[in-house]
Amino acid sequence: MKIGVLHPGEMGVSVCAALAASGHEVLWCHDGRSPETHNRAQPYAATETIRELCEKADGIVSVCPPHAAKSQAQAVAQTGFDRVYVDANAISPNSAEEIAQVIGAKFVDGGIVGPPAHTHGSTRLYLSGARSEEVAGWFSKGYLAVRPIPGVGIDGDGRQSGTELADTRASALKMAYAAYTKGSGALLLAVNALAEAASVREELEKEWEISQKGLVNRSRVVAKGTSRKAWRFVGEMEEIAATFEHFGLTGAFHEGAADVYERMMALKNQPPSELEAVLERLLAVKST
Amino acid sequence: MKIGVLHPGEMGVSVCAALAASGHEVLWCHDGRSPETHNRAQPYAATETIRELCEKADGIVSVCPPHAAKSQAQAVAQTGFDRVYVDANAISPNSAEEIAQVIGAKFVDGGIVGPPAHTHGSTRLYLSGARSEEVAGWFSKGYLAVRPIPGVGIDGDGRQSGTELADTRASALKMAYAAYTKGSGALLLAVNALAEAASVREELEKEWEISQKGLVNRSRVVAKGTSRKAWRFVGEMEEIAATFEHFGLTGAFHEGAADVYERMMALKNQPPSELEAVLERLLAVKST
Image (cartoon, rainbow over all chains, first blue to last red; front, side, top):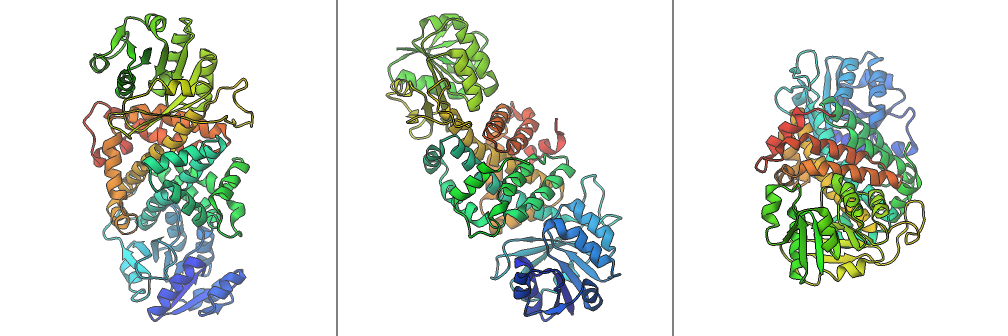
């Protein structure tokens, strides 16, 4: 098959590799992409335009920052594309439903858990919806494990999906997973910043070493691991907040997490930052 | 010495025990206390009124729910009490400063980290302010470790304390510590509730077993460990949110945590609840 991947970012290019390992021809579209993407996607067949990719592809996987997911789907729908479209982005079930409406019947919802898939066992692509098994069949080899979620989901209003609503449980699962990992990471950075501002960080670290072993080290790991990626976590935290609200729960935790990651925007193109440099950003930038 | 403890709740009575072990006569006031408190405080000398306690005591330690800390201090101040008053409650540095203004020069700020002190090494009372060492001297024996924070603090506006402002770093430390432990606990419960509502809790637990070992078990431990105490965490989360805001950081995480614990209010007088029972409460109660 010919499968289009929009777009080969760090995660997307590992999806390209899994599809290529499974014997497919992988297409990407170089219109508007960065030099880094050109470099990463060099082994795969480039098209000039989205239209050209949509004409050639037997299926498409969308892997992009959350804020771009809907416009990406609209650009594909405008070409009249009528084959399977997998949205594998970190978006709320509501956003996935909107994309399902744009794309039509051959929409499959997806959610990726883990880092870009460069080793066995690191990363899973969850899928939900009627064509999940069909899409799982695209990935017979490679490092990305693909997991269709069986059965039919129930949405917040208690309506069964499979009727007029798409089955967006893969997005819900991704939101719930990232809600804890990225939410608790942001919380931990904020707590360190609070202790720094109040001149008690040394005392907090000593207390953690007694009663919360691991938090001192985890603070340093989270700072280095998120400083360059925080800019694209902001939209994801907003999608997670919306997901909590949709189900009648509080979105406040992830409004807080979005605030923390937004203050770290300027670290995007820096080398991985030490905790102290991250705390400096958190305390220098005020809430928007 | 004669030391008054207001009041001997679960934590307070362990403070009484440490003071008694150190050779002091411990006073408490039975006016308005519950039968449980009467039972717990039975080994110690009861007074009829706060005034009587204040007339007899050489020092007072306040250990009460956050929302009661200020009215407690006002009741003591109204008696003309002029010896050392330790506020050991889970309140923001701003609230501690307000109490310092009410109490006057012999205020010592405190913050307790850990469970009620019934074994060695479980629990620490942090102190800040000019008379910290003096108060630490009250606790020569017993299970409660007492830690004066050395030096002079700087507040959010960069003013040195020790001038007209009290040194409230013990409260700041308590806020920062509880911000992560109780904040991440509330977040974890909320994430489980989200997954339950979206019909993906089984999938989330399976994914956690692969990539976040410990979260399935921690969810169950947090549910059982907090269900009966959540009612008194609400005020603490509000104090923490105010602390973040005071230092120019986001209070949103702990507005979310307050919402979660508030939904669990009805579990106060129940046996420790299973995770499923907690999730049912979280999903049944709507935000206020």
